[in-house]
Length: 554
Image (cartoon, rainbow, N blue to C red):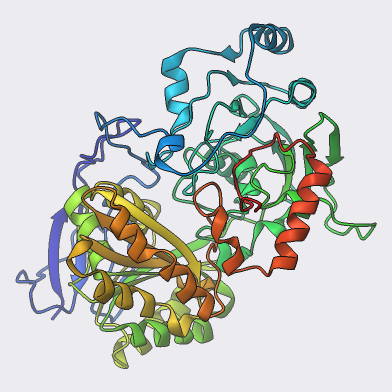
């Protein structure tokens, strides 16, 4: 007999940048777990769009508002980067009154010098990096960006391009007094072709708003991030963001068709093509995808959007061990094939922190590991049959011990929230040492276990989660406060361990300020030297996003 547990979702209690309240929906979860004590006598009409099969699980309801981001309020002021880290200011000029007057002529009324506004723009959202910029510029057009950079190039003024400021490695905030060049007002859609699905827009468009725009026209954006409510498409491209749809749609290096970029001297490079095939000369846009604003400022993007799936299912499943997680992934790929759009994993400590700090209910019985499987396709009946076949196989073979499936929008959001808000939960647990690495999937979790033994009680939590479908592990270590001793125990150990597996020390977050000096663990000296040569060619004075991405020269 099926067992039922009725539960209510919780209020989004964490202090948020944009306060949000989550409705208290009543929903039902079906389980095979012996812990649940209530027996179903009847199924009410409130079950909505749930589908019922001969499996001991079913649909969970909304647990939290997907995309609601938070930051702690009233926390201590962040120590300036120049005091915390051993970095010296390069010999750039200092912004003068004459410079401010020149900027005011270029962008009247959009030269920001108010200390309160600048305080927000000077600090990364993780509150670990803090610059001391005295001016922020907010252009609306490519021409304005060009005139600004031309002036900065002539005056040798350093510039820090900034989008939504959602980066993880300190790449989007100043280190010293660099001018903040914000793309926030460059938020217009230029064109959209409803046959090809090609979107052309300015760099400051927010990812979530773009997704809403193309969804109204029957398409979706090819990338999806937890920070989608704040991040800008230009920043996504500049960091080559990966995200939750990478498994299905690949990287931005494949979906970005063209870029418009302003170089350090103000030259506008117009490669904003909407052609899917163009085999003429060097593919220059690839230089700027993932360059983190060090080679040029992206001002517009042409990107290919896939058709919006007509049927989406999300399964949230518990697994008894990591070997079973890997076997479930292999089975999943074989049985779901073309409709598999995401395969995420998280460990038990992740779920513990999400419940402790964000009050999100765990929708399945406690397990050592959890996986989230998403399918998306054009036929609900076809996709449901394939997913049910996988679930029956996984349950019958012991790869999965418990699970729940969502098919309607609100329930899918609630299940994704458990994965997407792990970063937020970690930020409430103390100081977070974050590592974003790529590893062979068979060694994926070994580093987490290794570090738990190595660090012992010096760390509050050592957790692992991420995109198993593309080999990307998010390794996070929390402590009560920043500890130099703990950092010494982590670095360079994490990087040497990763390099020994021929992995990457940055899978999708980029290098920014925090990781620039570990580039050599993933790239040979000849590659690093060539990167410096490209930087010198395109930005000979080094004014674009200095102190980021490339290691300091000896």
